[in-house]
Image 1 (cartoon, rainbow, N blue to C red):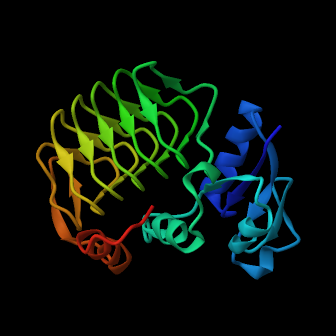
Image 2 (image 1 turned 90 degrees about the vertical axis):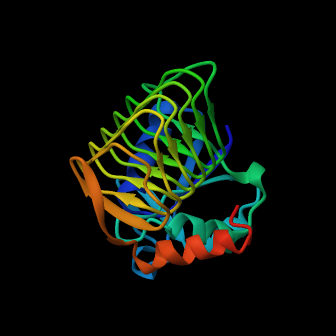
Length: 229
């Protein structure tokens, strides 16, 4: 059984560890986290082996990066760039209760937690975080580094561009797009396209302000054509 390292030791990393245990496809070696205070401890019975760069010392293990939160949802992209691993080092973790249709695709480094539903011809990119009970319907496209919090739903033909964040319970109307590194607040209803690098919330969703600095930094990186994968 192939060994798996989870980069991160916070909530999303712990949820992913449980999905790995439930799937039974890997031997879970442990967490890696740059918080030195966690090194040598256990999180939910899983050891924290050391800092993130330890991935280079265990070259046969597969890796999944499970960091980020609404205050800094660009953290995964920064770590992917920093660690600079070949794509084949990254695992794709799908909880056994997730329903992924035969016509749908999920990229390397992505995580689908319990009871997600990808109905038909859904495209999920690399290093995407999909939380429990998310519904992605026909022809949806979710680009690299996006985050979809629990209970969010996308209508058919919708798109989340690179690094976009959908809050818990948010709804995206069919055929609409959320721009790169934009954030949609929890419970919002998005009825039209959202530009890149903005925060929207409400029902119907409206622009609140510009996205925070970490997201805007990644948006600038993308526009300059620098690689993030």
